[in-house]
Length: 501
Ligand code: ZN
Image 1: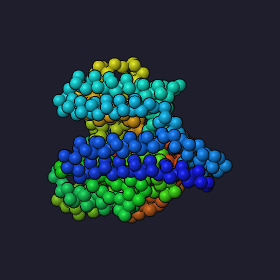
Image 2: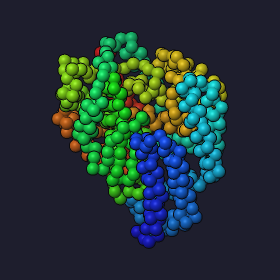
Image 3: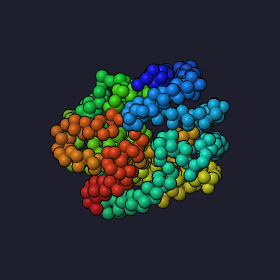
Image 4: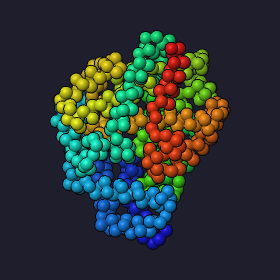
């Protein structure tokens, strides 16, 4: 490539460095920083964020982008250079459309809304949060309008998390899937052989939980030379470049699954980023291509691997060795059924595989109705509770366990929730292809041999980072776009067998 392209990469690298530095500070804030650091840290993060944005939308960067485009014009359209330029140009066009005065106001409004949400949740007082949410939803409509014309007001918001995805597609996938998932849960409740998971609600030593988690993710292939694990209140994965991809986890002393599956989940995210080609480092492509594809990776390791019979036939003896009093006399089959118990619950983050997507679908329907002005914010609690009754057969006793449970809306994040459910679908779609390509996969997992699986993911998904858009990536790997059928088959087969339907 020419000199102009090199200049462009250098400027792009500086923006990346500023964002990575902010990510380190944010990681520190959520892991080790003493509470007294809060005020100063907010200023530091705000300064770094502003500098990164200013450099990105500067005239110098614009000129470098134009000059680099000349350099890259004759390059293979699938080359790293062409793909980096394509993606950066798209990000640039988007960011330029949003006035910085609007960004400043949005940051101010959401900072206040977050505090209001925390208090409102604590007192289960939706009325106190309502005016803030009204402002946030109004500003989100304004944001969408920077990107007119659009098909649906939801589309520009969704596009920030899932490039190319439209609300209409999400709606059609969800509407088709929802009745089937509701019917499966009803069948489990009415006809299923009961599953008891009380054994998880005992005292489990935190250090032993930690040790077991580390053993598992080391087995998966998580590279501790290029990452580390720490504890935080809300587990997350963060990257400061491809040589340092960290995870955090959270343990509950008297409930084992949270820490165990949370660790596998975050390791799934981290394995994705650790596998990205180093040629994409210091660019916006050095991360997953979308949140749904990212979530497909975390869900795959957590559920398709981590809640499978093959996995536990390999790792159950280790868990029994860590907790002989708790599991010494519990048979593998009983344990397997327990970790796969299906039970409609109020809180999304604790939902099982069969009910999880219903939590997402109702949030998506509500977001859509809010943005399309079909639903006033004031009616939210009523609509929320009605949908929980309809889809899950339960009614939240208060708004703290209902409409106020998630932090997302107070941050101003609308259009994000669908990616969680889409991730579950994509995980199963990829899994069917993986099983075709690796017919002895289960046998390998039973021998704690994850190398063929990780290698497949590395070659087909990870290495590309953000080079291909999500739909394009799925087409390349599976030969078709997003499909819900593999997910439906997976749920029917797995839970039909466990519950003897
Ligand atoms: Zn995740």
